[in-house]
Length: 101
View 1 (cartoon, helix red, strand yellow):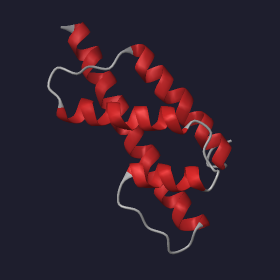
View 2 (tube, rainbow, N blue to C red):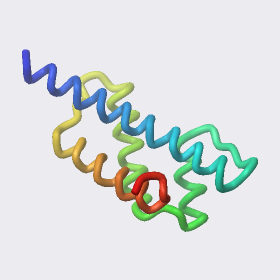
View 3 (spheres, rainbow, N blue to C red):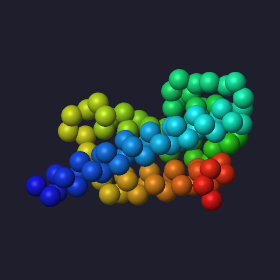
View 4 (cartoon, helix red, strand yellow):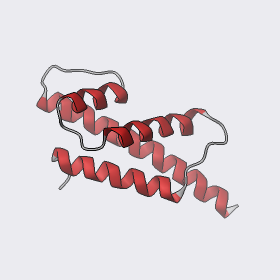
């Protein structure tokens, strides 16, 4: 149905957006903290938090956990509100980091 397709697209958006955010943080860390490498998004968020570079760490960790649920738990679906919240928090962090202005 159209509703199921919309839900599927929202889940894909959520997963892809977090992946893009993760890759962006990796590049940001590599550029600004030469030689520093982390294997997971959680490690990158924690590192940037400790260096005072992120605004809303709690929400970022929640989005990361939601992404994991969408990826691994059958029957877990994103909503329009989830997608909007993710877009807003990522945009805010990108602006803060100077990745997107």
